[in-house]
Image (cartoon, rainbow, N blue to C red):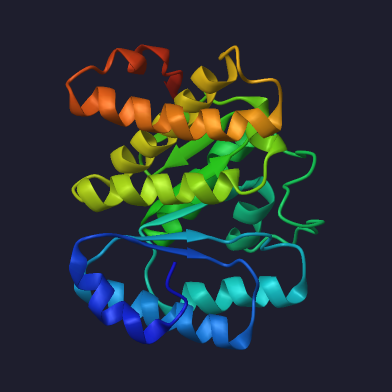
Length: 237
């Protein structure tokens, strides 16, 4: 939650990860993002880029290009419109939402794979089915719940969840991104089934509870919840 780029040199030494969430784009903000990105790149700390609403305005599209040129991102996470914007396709988003999809599942998988190969990192495209790739391995993930699309900030929380995994699993970026995605979306599924969840308002605290419960269970060696994972490798042959 640090907005001041000068803090990044110290923060990058603490063993965590950096999430650059474009949020509200301003000249000062872009300068601070670039300083933070450089500091974490020098320290070898993982960086997750969340190009929020990247295709909504010319200013945001230019900001995406500026940040891509400023340093290296270990993971780029976004919805279809945002990932297309990062790739260089002109997409008119109405805001942070992706809007109706115009691509087939195979086209989405191909886009994610090609962008990951170009940037030499991991790309996560969220949607009804998520696609994750490091340019060589590509997976489709069918977990999650529609209530995630009914609350504000769900994608931002996912980016942070992935960054936590990236900080502790630096040897395999794809594995860390996939772990973060599954933790988050399976927690959402479990939360949605609770009797106290009546809609988006009651879903949010339940989601926070279930994220905690899965983390606690895993730390105690109970990974039975992973049986809910719906992951398939994408075959491009």
